[in-house]
Image 1 (cartoon, rainbow, N blue to C red):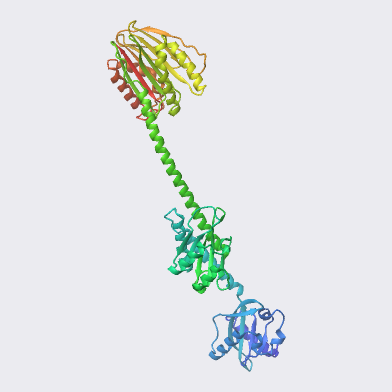
Image 2: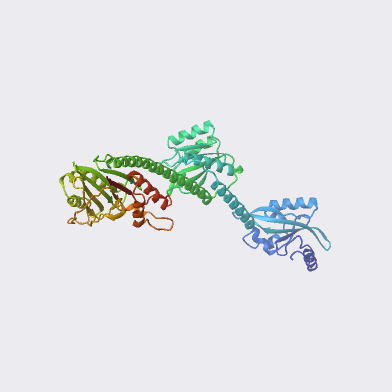
Amino acid sequence: MEQLSGVQGRDLMRELRSTLLLFHSFDPYILLNASLKILAVSSNLIPLFFHRNHKTRLEGSPLKKLRCPNLEKLVRSFNRSGEVQLDSTVLHTWKGRDKRLIDVRLSKVEVGSESGLTLCSLRDVTDRIRQEERLWQTNEELTILYEMSQVEVRSLQHEDILQNVLARFSELTNLGKGFFVRNPLHALAGPEQINYNLVDREAKVLGELISNRRLPRRFFRDESTRYQTGGERLLFFRSMADLGFTEVLSIPVFLKHAVFGVLAFLISSPRFVRISTNNRFFNLIGQQVGLALEKAMLFSELESSFKEIARKNRQFREELALAQKMQRGILSLDFPRKPGIHFAVKYVPSYHLSGDFYDIFEISKDRVGVLIADVCGHGINAALITSFLKASVQDMGQNHDQPNQLLDSLNHKLHALLNNYMFVSAFYLIVDLQERKLYFSNAGHPYPLRIHRGSKSVDELKADGTLLSVMDDSEYSAQSCSIESGDRILLYTDGMFDMKNKHGEFISMDYVRSFSLRHAALGGHDFIELLISRMFQFANHKRFEDDINLIVIDFD
């Protein structure tokens, strides 16, 4: 230890080791006498203040040569009090252009006959304090980001969202006044300007600047910036300075990968602002606000789409109801009234529009035509084909004496119309009351049942033929049988046999046969209603999977 004898140096080191509670063994130190003359310095002290080794120049020199007035003032105060300095005191000093933060601890020591000596232990804490400040700032930023994400948006309007953001961000950062202005170059529509907490004069000046396009272009760059208003030549910053604001903080709001607008905050007292400039943090705020706006835009578009869908759905339902009414209107309800014959019909569509069709019409004084058909599928396409059948069948029936001739004509027309796109099953029956005979032809349709109530037996009106519109050259045969008193004919579509119970079982033809015999005494309408009721029970009252059409013809 320079400037001290060997004995004094050893005594001083012994004293230092006994005060390890106060000092770290490797901290830089300065030993001062009562007149603040530097007696000794450690080598590791020099880098705290100088770029070169000035150790030899310091020892034996007054403390003021260290060019650290705050340290001299601190030591003089300590010497007057005479108390051991246990708490850390941060000393600000400059090394070149870099401001350093030095932790200072003072203690009185005695070496031999020397008394009134002051030991200054110094430690550079710049990096540690700056790291703590960065951690504190990061925590503040994370807190603000979290709080901003929790801002409840009760509206899908951009104006409400931006108003909430201005208010909440101002509250969290102590930025009392602000506004939003939209980027005039952005293609998306939105609020032009939103003010927050501005008095009338401030709002008026700002409104004039915005309407006259006097905002600085730098506002709409991709990075946030704090601007000093005093040194700016632009009219906007001069106007803000005249209003008493010293700084302006701008935060770009990103929407669709472009700056949609800017959140700007007017600062009159920077020392009261609870956050420092950090472009990355502010850009995160801008992106977060942009995401909220984008979600609101998406929800608004979805809401508009849902309204449009609902409108079209209402329109479709109205059109569907009209089509359903029209389809019901083409079905025969006013049956031919002939002595010795009675008709009963039940038509149960599974959807609004059905592919099942029937027609009962008079051919001549003693002849009645009965057609039952089933268009494959449901909906509008099937309904259109039933309309075609209605328009064609009665005219054809008047021109053809035999049932197979009518099916031939229908097949040619449907094949040309549908081009194998859809197919139709049909059964056409001609009742000749004078001859007491039935003439019939089949185009892929289920065989009707003939119930002989006198002999209590059931058989089928069997005739075969391909579906209509499958082939243009399909041929259909005509069959005939006699009518006996008390006979009942049951015509139906295949929807009756698509009914399933809870075990997945279908209604069988044997069940329909036995049911027909057991309830043969019922009138035609009662017979059909009871059969439909039993079918519902069988299917556990579920909706029919397919259209059901039943026609009963009773002969006296």
